[in-house]
Image (tube, rainbow, N blue to C red; front, side):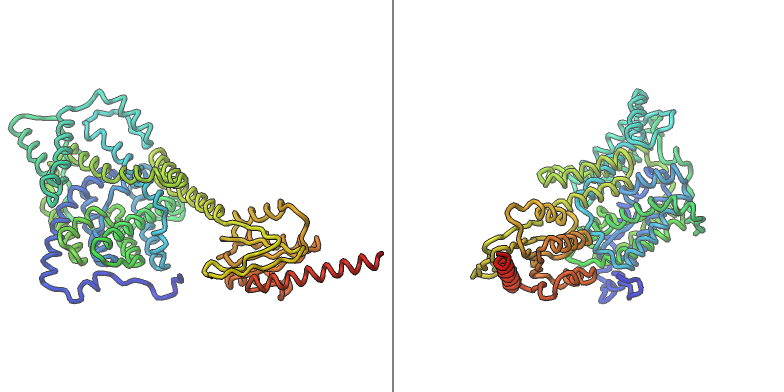
Length: 575
């Protein structure tokens, strides 16, 4: 885990070039062209929804897609702007401006690189699934809500609030300003997106919708006098088609401190989405993603993109799957996809200016529907209630507040649920007369007789703070006469934390004060080491720490007999 060790950075691009053939290049070229075309409406729509110009979305897809392909750890990953970032980007721009977004994205890139260098790629995959489903569904609902003005052509003269409830309050107050030509364009666009895959799954519905609706609107405007439907050109004017030059990002400690939480959210979201996309791709292609290299590649992309005015980048599941479906198998397809976007950016932007805003709104409504994962949520209703509540809380916090709070509270709640389950699964048994010494894999059972005054407390499970409290309560509430020897059987304790060590220390000390001896049995090496470092073993005679219950019972029985003899002798002398 040390950053001083050799970095786990092995780009899939270099491995993909080994034994590369002309036949594979043909497949990658076809896939790259198709994915590049598919990426056009998505990059533009995500950019506009995030509060930046369409050109920024294309520049992000060009640079980010190229770097992810060349530096990433997955052979078929397609990088670019995604819907998951829309809300956090929009909020950062609203509060800190474009300069704040550039700094937050740059910082997020640095965090991703560090995660990869510290070899935490596999750890990121352990984010609880209900949290991922919850915030993804929340993002989908939020994206859906942001598209209402463009889809219905609402005329809103007041400032639209950033919060979900306030936003819908403004929509409802202004819903009487619906522009029906715009609404018709939106509905027709949505219909084409939905129906196109039913005709051919190879034809991208979003692109088909944009081409057909843009051409139809141009005809309606020029030959039938239809007005009132806003286009990209109407809102943003003529878009500059010159590729932006790199520029430095200004920063100071105050701005870094303010933007660090947002940068961390961007980094975690980018890591989760890119590794999720890579995992899905590996399941289809049979490949194997180097998670640490993928994080480093994503980090380099997010460090570079803001230097050109771009927005955050991550692996895009839909575009990655389109790449696989069309034959892409090496990162060359991702490079081709970026070159196709570059050509379109340099030579086809005047045509993009004619695209109706309602059509892009329809594209994002379909994106939000696909992101919602309602079928997954429906299937998770029957899961344990703890998981369901994590999902619900994460979803509601994402929608009502923001993604940063949702991930933080969702993770905290998931940890609490996990600890509760672990503590519930840690059982404590008490034996007073006889004990079955057999392990679970033994066929013959050895029954050990316990001498009077000997009790056995067996801990089955991790001895951490939740279980330690349960053990302490059981020790206090055990009925019957006070024993002379307590055997603590720990063969099934995989680890012990500081609270468990503290409780065990108190137990030993209080037992000694009461004249009760303590014998430990079946202590694993890692637990024994923890006890040694905490000097717990110094409280017990070395002979009283046994590696097996049979030895522990022999020691305890002998101690109990000696105690009985001494007690009897003392009574006789007194008489």
